[in-house]
Length: 108
Image (cartoon, rainbow, N blue to C red; front, top):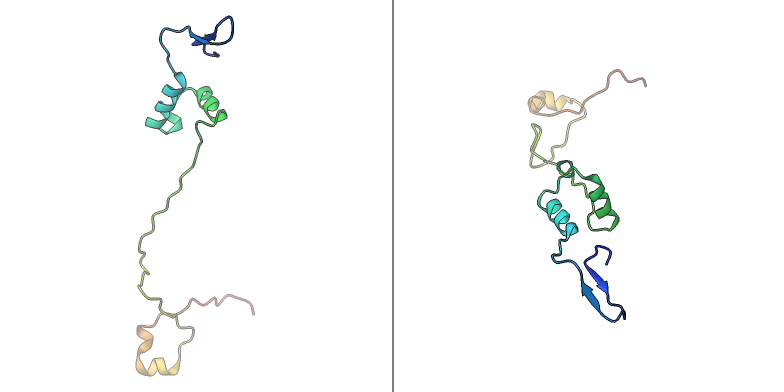
């Protein structure tokens, strides 16, 4: 009745059709947003606000991350050495060992 498609009869017992053709503008707007969900491509912000208010459309933000193997990737975690020992020097293991970074500028 708000869109002037139908009206109540005089005795208010039945509904009579007024409009010859029913054009549902809300369905057209929703199908436009469904086909192209990017908000920036739609010019009429008032329609979008009206659809939000009626809870026909909700805005959701998707965040995604791409994780790749880096240069230091190893399938197993290797324990980093903290000190250079005499045994490492004798055996030559210090050449292949990875050491933790030392902060030599720290006060203490």
